[in-house]
Image (cartoon, rainbow, N blue to C red):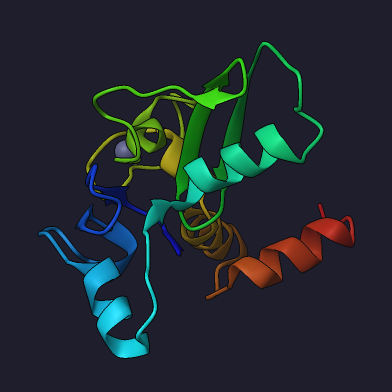
Length: 149
Ligand SMILES: [Zn+2]
């Protein structure tokens, strides 16, 4: 199974999953195995997309490529010669706080204009402020696709 968060090298223990508000070790693989009677490995969701793209996607045979996801958060993973690149802050979601717009909104961590301003919740908040009423991300997407200025 995959999860949006950091998984320990044992491929069974989630150490950090901000969207689930998990900031401590959760033995998710063991919990799922106990509940289902089946073996369970746990992997980071973006790394799994990267491996899928390396094996079956349009990125087969490329020297290097990255997977970037934007939704409730910002995800990033890098492959070299078809294999995921490992680095110390991998899968902690730190790309989400890289500056993209010096005049952008402030994120929950206090940064101004970091990549978090591109997430669904941030776009909904920015759109709500522009429209003067509460709007959802779906409202924003629908109006943008309809060409509403
Ligand atoms: Zn930030």
